[in-house]
Length: 294
Image (cartoon, rainbow, N blue to C red; front, side, top):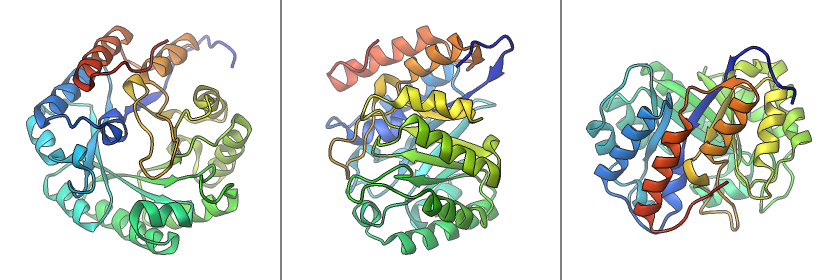
């Protein structure tokens, strides 16, 4: 991508506290997670997914996400969000006045059944209801499509299927549409084609991408999406992440790498790279292992 002469903003959402920590054997305390949220805000991140509201017996790493929300100081201009998997989680988010919720449905029937215990058709119907309810409740909403570029179990996912799912979600009027490369099967050509098709349908300015780096193409896919007009991405400090229901699914693009690449291409992220390195170091101590490094 050509170096830019004018500064243009790219929005980075940190998802390590949810997508990253849910895969770790060590369960961080509420206080530790709240401290990480505060540190991320100090580093300049304006979009932070603080966790998910889910049955703690199913995902013990996310236990107490509501307590994390209560503990952190609410900084003006920061979009705090949670992932909600069902109606119960959504009602809890609305009751706690969490300002932004994320609702995802899989483009793969097999993955949907493994991830949520529901068929694609059932999960999509539920997701549309949840998005509508969240909008009515005054929350901002990201409506996302998992396995948008392929499924470990089913193989390729057609562009037509993704467009149909997005069209159904759009009827509930979400704030943002997100595409997740859950398995890391995307390539730059597929990303560009998908973004261009969705851009014609809903506008690229409302699109966000959640890219995994399973095959080492995460950054190349980010650049392809940039070229197609996307300006919002999910990343994770230290490249934390994956999917517990997909064997071999690697983590997300590291926030450090994304910020460095975007700033080098003359985009503005508003994030301090040095602060991210300190947060990564703190996470390594908490988790007892080395994370992604350049």
